[in-house]
Amino acid sequence: MNSVGEECTDMKREYDLCFNRWFADKFLKGNVSGDPCGELFRKYQLCVQKAIKEKDIPIEGLEFMGSSKEKAENCS
Amino acid sequence: MVKHFLGVSVLRTPWDQVFAAFWQRYPNPYSKHVLTEDILFRQVTPDHKLLSRRLLTKTNRIPHWAECLFPTNVSRSVYVIEDSIVDPKNKSLTTFTWNINHARLMVVEECCVYCVNPENSNWTEIRRQAWVSSNLFGFTRAIQEFGMARFKSNVTKTMKGYEFTLAKMQGEVPSKTLVATAIEAKEKARETALAATEKAKDLASKAASSQKQQYV
Image 1 (cartoon, rainbow over the protein chains, first blue to last red):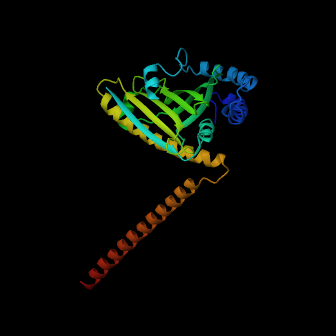
Image 2 (tube, one colour):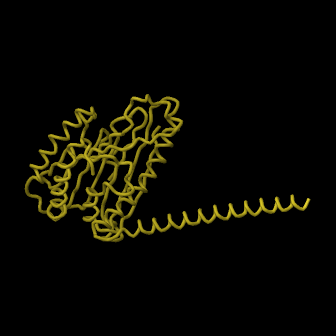
């Protein structure tokens, strides 16, 4: 899948490949040691965060699991 | 006033495969409205949960009657944030998703919990809740109705997308898609046949009327 920053798509794909392998083969099987694909992730983030700034996408200050914690908690 | 949706979908696939498909489902033939996908944050907590934030860009389909409400220079894409928590110990995946622009027109918030189906441990169920709200004076109700209809149609697409992705991951030709293609082809054939019949009737009646004229 394409990244919002066209120039980041290749880095994203490389990271996705690494992550998906880690997720299925290690994380879901209870083997959770280490940082998943850290170096690829950092490289990809430098690119995508720049693209987000350039496109003025308003991602700053958004609380994890949404502004509405109440909804998220009631959900489960 | 907020419109509320509650629903449960079942995938006949074990939880671990569905969780893996969660990260691999875009693109699929039913996700044409999803334009881009990015991971903005990822962390494994000390209690072995995976926290992620995904940014999606989606097309902003709006009803024709609402098009005049939009200045033409406003971006037509909708930016959507999807936060998630994967808990492999409890075999659960919780997501919270909402749009971060066009919020005055409409906010759609969705919360999903993926877990093992209580009746069949080889199946996975998705419990879904959504809230659609609008603050656009005078149009609130109409926009909420539209938003809810669009949300429901997107749920169907999500489930079809999952079936496609899961089949692909298992190395199968997605049978559903083949069936859907066959049905489409059959319908098209029927339409063509119908059009031909109509045309033949039309020609026959024209011929009949011109024959009548000749007799007069």
